[in-house]
Image (cartoon, rainbow, N blue to C red; front, side, top):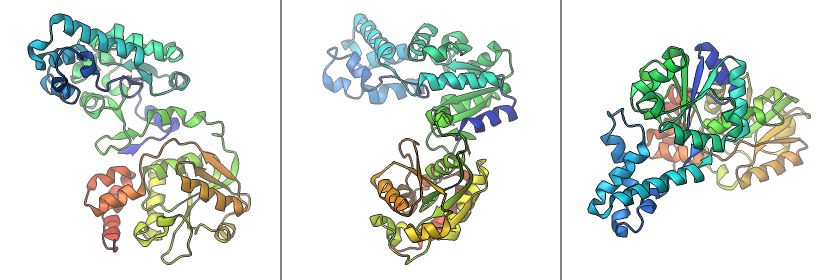
Length: 422
């Protein structure tokens, strides 16, 4: 699996693979519909509350399982409402079913929220056009409904897209290969010239890949997909930061990297785009070092991995994901250490994700170094969670670190952590 953290990396992939059409999944990638308890609310008053309680937990999955090979389904909302009514037995009359379907459609049309900004999506479409790539919206439903939602939420982006492609147009849904072969045919290309970007592995990655399309999985952690982007929002926003151009000759990022994970990689790659040269300072580099602050962060159980291992992991992960050459150095978090290692003009990059970040900024400022705070959004992965999973024998931790770290250093990391007293 290769992480694609920015537009430049996606553009490079598009050029390398001769992609001519990009299909963006709609629900879950661009749009979040109001799904919470919507079946129970749609049938409220039709049946007793106990009968409604598990509809939303059971029915959608049952519908997918029942119709997995039925590629003729072009309106999942209707099929889902009908299945919910079947489970309610005689409690739901034809009028109740019609009212429930109308209710859910009305919510989707009027209460869905965008997962990306219209202006960001519009610029993404413009960038694709600049490199000769068409953008279509890959929606799984009737054209009139999907088009109404998209144009309402993305009026500017709607002006630039080439088509809203739907199940109705393909006469088949995204669980079948016909959807993607028809998408390619309508755009005058072979499937291998199509790139699909979506959040569902089963529908947006596995199926299009089976017919020759390229696919990018939008997921915070995914070990199954060949290409992954942690967040489509991050992808289209990366170069919208007002400070994306190289502004500084030298900069640094600081962290314990216990172990280096996907959020660390995102932090390093983002910082690297602002400087000519980047230093990665590994704090808590040696056992029995002076107290660097941070409470439990200084405890031995929170620092099981030696400096040499963290250094190799960082260097390999950055290189594997297209980053520049970086200097990875031991750097205890103290004013004296910072002054001894970093050039006086060095800018130190931080992110405001927790209270400790503010305390760390205080130490850096007191040492006399300027700070550039990057806005990378909420933290999706933590070293604490990874260490806990390793200790519990949960191999899911491997999907939370860059692929090369999982494959090349996975056993070494497990050995080091499990050999430490906890």
